[in-house]
Image (cartoon, rainbow, N blue to C red; front, side):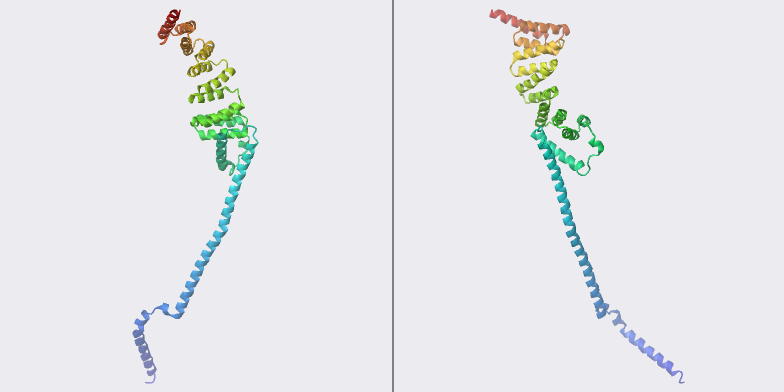
Amino acid sequence: MFSILPLFFILISLAVIVVIIARKYPELTILDLDTIPERKEKQKKKEILSRKASQRSKNQQERMKHVLVPFAKVWEKIQTSFRHYVKRLKDEVAEKKQYRMPMRIAKKKEVSSELSAAREHVFKPYDDTDREETIEDILKKGSRALEQGNAQAAESAFIHAIETDKKDMRAYEGLGDVYLSQGQLAEAEESYQFAHKLSPTSVSTLEKLAKLAMGRDEWTTAIQYYEQAVLIEDTNATFFATLAELFLKAGQPDAAYEAISQAVEIMPKHIHYLDMLTEISIMVEDKNRAEEAAHAIRMIDPEHPRLATFKERIADMEDQKNSKN
């Protein structure tokens, strides 16, 4: 009897506990853990630590900016200073030149050299092969580039040639050819003029200058250039024939007659020159020479289309002479 009582009391206690828990369970399930003071304190600490970490990250970024910005400015200053240094060296070299380049060529040279330096010399100096490149190699490179239609490469090569040898007229003439191919006539003429000063006996330069003058209808200027050319090459029939045409344009038929006579003397069977001689002889009223030139044409080409016209005009010359007498 007495041994059963303790077990009875234990069972009753457990039943009471179960009843209490069952009644309180709904309250426990809706309990907000964040309202517990300890929990709230821990949450607050976590938020504070998170804000501190975020603030530290921002502070580090700001410090990095302050560190990197001066470096960027210093690097920019170094680049600017180096470019100024390169330009100053070029200016010093230019001042020491015995011959000064024309203004427009100098500007082209400065711009092209600066671009070339930025691409090659500043960041990638010439190697041993470039330094050993001769003026002949550079000029050939420029000529090839021009033949291939690469004006930019040709211009760069000829400017490099000028830097290598400032007195080589071929570099200036080549540079003029580049500008001429691009329709930059003023720059081309300045380059040719400078080449002519370095080599006054260069016939090719004289002819190019003459043709530029002809393009502007400046007949007298073109005549002067061709007169210099024929003094150097007095066996060039083309120069004399061109002179004859220019004298006609300038209203000087007598000078044209002398020039075309020289061309025919050099090339006596050239139909075009004989045609010009016949025409100009009629203009200056030299009947005998007109007949001789027309006869020479007939011996070479009896079907020449202007022979009949020449015959009539020569006959008119005879009639006019008889009427005057």
